Length: 225
Image (cartoon, rainbow, N blue to C red; front, side, top):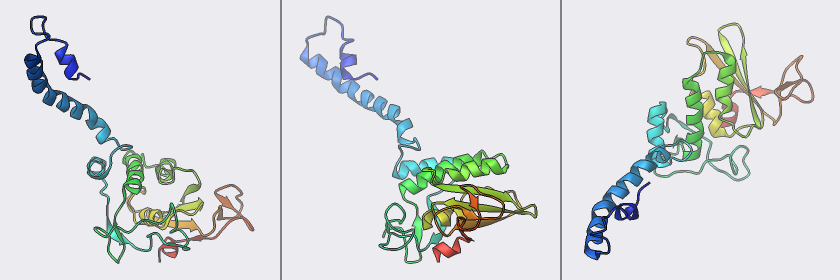
């Protein structure tokens, strides 16, 4: 990118070494240089990995998901000695946005993760494997697993095993902020009640396991009530 020295270097030999002329050229080109720097930085300002605050809100408009939730998410604020609400799980209370009823506005990091998943959902091809891939973006560390089962009766089950996600992400998942189900199909959610696989018969892996290793699955209301 050109700077003021670049333009001053274009001065003809007749005007070089003339302080007043150089000062005039500098005064003329500085706004142009600043404008060029601003335009060049715009892609970073609105990059989903770099954007913050209002810039991230603009990204959300393009993606199709606001950071404001329709129904306040209760019981997800940071709290000592409370399961799913400690460090790296609970959300700090925002007095200017949140109400006693719950969270109404997502913080930048949570919103960024949701937008990544929504981008994947926008390109969903209607198959269960691609739905699973989109939902797994919500849990990028790989400690939480997603299982999608077609029950062959116009219902599908989304199972969550491994490390129990935070109450906030459980609420986002169950309230349909990622529309990854065919129209007219009912979605049910089961989340492991103990870190580890979900309980199931005739299956033994990191997702579903039998007696003494699998845990009962519970609906989202179990964790957010």
